[in-house]
Amino acid sequence: MPTPQILITAGPTHEPIDAVRFIGNRSSGRLGVALADEAARRGWSVTLLLGPVCIAPAEAGVRVAGFRTADDLDALLIEHVPTCDVLIMAAAVADYRPRRTVSPDGSSSHTGTGKIKRGDQSLILELEPTTDLLAKAAAARRPGQFFVGFALEPRDRLRVSALAKLERKNLDMVVANPLETMDAPSIEATVFARGGTSLHTNGAVEKSEFAGWLLDVVQSSLRR
Ligand code: CTP
Image (cartoon, rainbow, N blue to C red):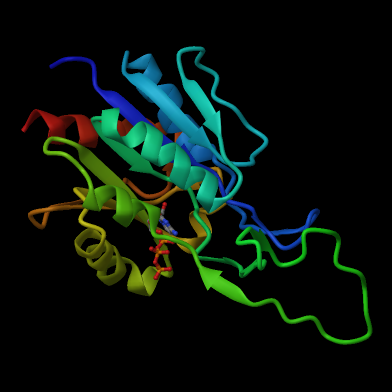
């Protein structure tokens, strides 16, 4: 098999409220970075789209492009998805962002581009949904591309939600993990694949160990 080109997204998005504040989440980027390092050690050609986090890949072979917002990541995916064989979408993309205001000249900006001043009244932020980037990428994929998504859910809804995401986003595989996984050093996951198969990690494992486990699963699916 020729060297697979793998595209991995990792970390949170920061959606601006004003020039200095944002809506974000606690994603550390650790899992995506571990996946990128492990794929590079296997000799894969790796591009990592990395959000605003404090870590970076250790392997020199990993090409990194940074994003801040869901829109930035959208633009990077438009550039990089067409040439990848495998997409692993581990980024914790915001589902909502502060609504943008459109000026009479047609330019758009987020709620207040300066710094919102303190006042005595409560402040209401209006949010608008972001694009589902993974569903958008999967809708345009070419034959042979293998797409993996994540589902972060409460334990009692893991299976049902992961299977729904597999269908709704038209994916090959969904990695389902409980909410406690975010910002944690370890992960306990179940992988659901098309055709009804599922695999479970042996309890909670370190994210670096999980990276090898998941790439083994992806690799054996590519060989089929
Ligand atoms: N995702 C995405 N674009 C978004 C939101 C999520 O591409 N705007 C991707 C994530 O990277 C992940 C998968 O979709 O691989 C599932 O993300 P999750 O937040 O669990 O689910 P949502 O699609 O946001 O659905 P819900 O909030 O209803 O669970």
